Amino acid sequence: MKILHCIPGMGGGGAERQLAYLAGPLGACGWDVHVALGTGGPNLPRLQAGGAAVHWLTGAGNHDPRLAWQLVRIFRRLRPDLVQVWFVQMEVLAGGVSELLGVPWVISERSSRLAYPPSMKNRLRVAIAQTADAIISNSAAGDSYWDSRASARVRRFVIPNALPLDELDATSPAVPAGMSLDPGASVVLFAGRFGPEKNVERLLSAMREIVKRPNTVAVLCGEGPLLTSLQTTIAADKLDDRILTPGYVADIWPFMKRADVMVATGLFEGRPNSVLEAMACNLPLVVSDIPAHREILDERSACWVDPADTRALIESVLEVLEDRFVARQRAAAARSRAAGWSVPAVAAQYDRVYRDVLGNHRTSRSFHRA
Image (tube, rainbow, N blue to C red):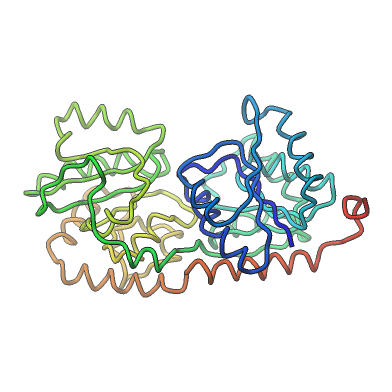
């Protein structure tokens, strides 16, 4: 059977990483995996190494009408049995083409309610979703967003993000290339997108105090709209040597093995890859008390803080750095929770859902009669 994934590009985000993880195992489940995309990125090599056939789209921007016509040609050439769409652009374009040609299609829900404020774009997203065959969310919070928005005919499933556990276990501690750290330094790590939803201003406020601890550095990895202003503030505070911002770090796992604690201060999430990977790397966690984190962690496996409480964040991080025995116990409990999210296990869940969707799809549509 042939599946076509439609995604804007294979950048460094969590959704792109998940698709790259799943390509090979889906092939092992009997799927001929194809991906239509417009741009490459750090997750493209893994996608291609997994055996996915890539079909390139070219356009002047997200709203270029030529993209729709290119998708029509790809659909007619490939004749996929099923289409999965990722992100709003492809929900609208590839979802519309799927409906036009009678191909069953599913939406990938990667976030939760707070990510979708009232807007024309989000209203359009909800409208197009009514024609989908299914919505696959990666979290309970993502699924609940559709409780009052999806038609009863749209089937809904929750499948967690996958973790390449064997690769993570085989990774050795290391510092990213070009970064100089004292071998004995305590490292506080953040890895994520520098956007308002990640609560980065409060994170920075906490880091200013935390790095006053002797031989302690904060390393804030990622990109996003707030990165430049964050770097400007750090420079103005003369903390460039204590709060490092290396940008997107493609191979973050060795550094997770080297770090002493990771902080995840988000105001809302779907199912955060960086937290899952930290769990698999036995890295102690200090996380904001939000539903997305409660879905994957408990009191035994992480330190919890109110995302609005800077002082609590400071104290929790310092507690982890000072009491390494308890921190290691929590990290081990988190690693145990992550054990069930291996890539093959998650791919098997997708396989079951895909077959279920196909079994429930009406097969009399024009595309398949042509």
